[in-house]
Length: 127
Image 1 (spheres, rainbow, N blue to C red):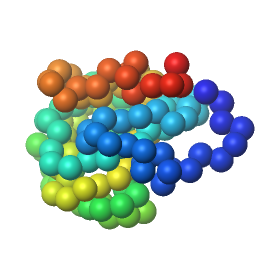
Image 2: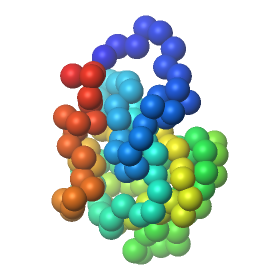
Image 3: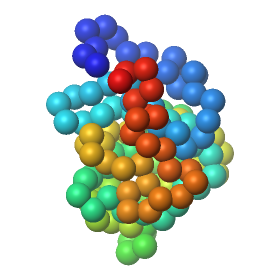
Image 4: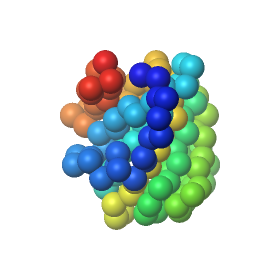
């Protein structure tokens, strides 16, 4: 999975057809670099052992928190959700993002729902 060539994030995102289905496009040490398209909302969840970074490429992403004000991200902005913090990403319209997550990060953290995507599926052809 070493990338000795440029990764075109926009091209990777154009290939995505499903919402809330991250795909791994690279790895930096013990972190995966993922892309995803979002629309609607995912599910309230937390990642007990890992921080999670959301970087917005296009659209506007709201991240709701149970214990603090929500964060609104626009293109070029990112936030890091600290480990253990309950959050719920919401995309009122289509949003394209880059995620940076530890390789052990489960898609929906401490919650498993129909929308949960296994890391094997996120890896796709990179396995």
